[in-house]
Image 1: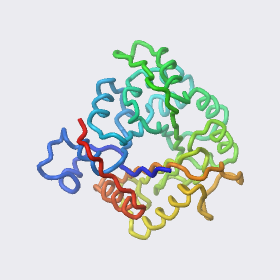
Image 2: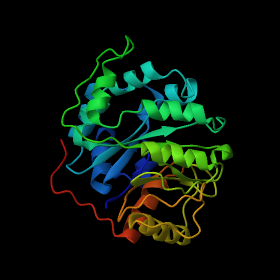
Image 3: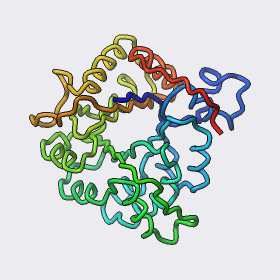
Image 4: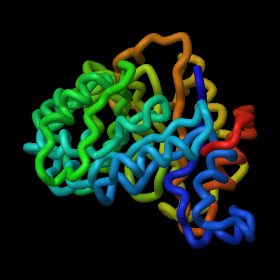
Length: 295
């Protein structure tokens, strides 16, 4: 069981005075962040296709044991809305994701709040997701001309973890839980002021996004809120679940003695995210002190 706590992205103007040292060059911000947290969620891959050299650089600039959670392309989730996305998925994996090697953590698929639950749409998409790096490398071979520098080497075969974040109340149905469990995909626990909260265990790991409970992307978490989340995370990590979990089904949770948990703070607008992440890590006793310097 491993608990990873980090932030969503790392390049924010408001962090330069309140989190990063005043004399830290912008090009060193990622390296500084990897000394503070054991994981980070990458936003850039959501907005535009990255290159193998960028992913390789992220790997080189992080210490051993650090992992990146990668956001899937919004072209797949928001433009295509999960339909006819075989080629875009191939392009995503050919863009260099696999160049992260052992730094590659879970892959997050964030759906738009306007997209309602369609069991066929979700089922077809889940069936396309590669389950390991070998399958991802094979899929990447089907990339099209939009990938200028394809990276299609899977390296040592490793399982891939996928997480789905939904933002519409129509997903509160047992069928979604059954679909996600069938494919071992985690349903994201998304704490925000503007979207419903789903706390259903559907995979051997949990993925939690802390957007800000009072004001999405902006509000600070109080001590009482972080205490409550720390207790919930302990239960999930220990193989159980909170008695008052906001479930979408009456199914018994998949049985595991322990579970890995990934937590990312996305309340970055007023620079609360890194500080809240450190406060939660302290409550959970998550220590991170890599001995070697990255890069």
